[in-house]
Image (cartoon, rainbow over all chains, first blue to last red):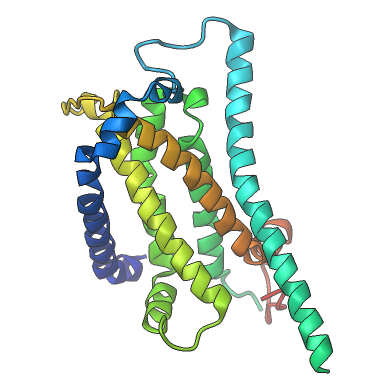
Length: 105
Length: 167
């Protein structure tokens, strides 16, 4: 553990510097015309779907439970889409490789 | 002859990754956790992410050095994809801080909620989940073999020579 902490000091600094560079590169985006377009777009009001802390919890328990469950389903589906597409691409590339290796033999 | 049970680096990585994935899922369900808990978990999430990168730091350095030399396509893709995930994660955390309603105000830092950063936070968080799904799929065989080795099949407590399973 002590060795891990000692060996991690420089890599941690590198990661923090890299993060700072990303932040510096991204912050000016708020000053662009595109940002103004997003701010003035009526869609951004609908995108703010997270419950505000001022609004508090859901009024009715069944809806709260449904919302609770749907949150996890949403996460699973979004990660699942990426995962399944990747698995499909890997499977296709493996098949192509097998076919090509079969032709060479 | 009894030998002390030694925790392998793969075992440490597996347990760290399980904590990381759990924390990642919890940060992405603000409807379930509520905004205050969502923000605090997201701040704490920085630690498992940092540990995840540090545990594989040697791989990162080695692959970066060989980036413009001969390298398997899958390794090259994983490196670039991991870099993109890192950038996206920093982006999501940044605009999360910029629209903080609970955590930063509790620390005495009050921010003006910019609708631009709010929109960016939602969209980039959704994109990040898909990107993490790709990342998990690329490392799926490692995940499955480690779970089989260290979770499903408990290694023998008393061993002279540990049978090798999987990788």
